[in-house]
Image (cartoon, rainbow, N blue to C red):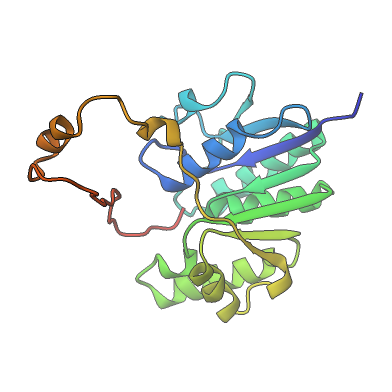
Length: 220
């Protein structure tokens, strides 16, 4: 029997309202179980966690938190290193700014064979402080040197990172965020009823809509 690869996904915040969390959930849930054994490491009590498949091994992280705090972040780095060393993962895949830095270095120190980071947002544009933004870009630049693959959710995102000297072009791949299509399947009701519920004029389609949110980007 072929050995399954152990993959750890690390994410600092995992709420239902987050595109990064939705992307991570779909990635974990849809991994081919004949080839991969998925793990999820995130702080306890995250609202997206019940949406994760029951066979995914959960690893609660005590010290990984969104606010920058050098002492707490050091504890988080050690905690992640111990987790990665204990389970001997084949791949460590990080998702947010905070876990992207700490998780990749922990995986590097633990000699993980493959380190992957998904860029869901531009971390060094999330602060109003130029100094903080520059420091974040420097940290991303250093972490890129120990990263095997950088996955960006858009070409514009990868261009912004490359524009700040973060990684090399050959490290990047564009992977657009997926959708859980069954959630949006036709429920079989007449189109006129659905248009009325949405407040649309009662005339033939096709109708094109966009659903999403606009919110201020923050470092994570």
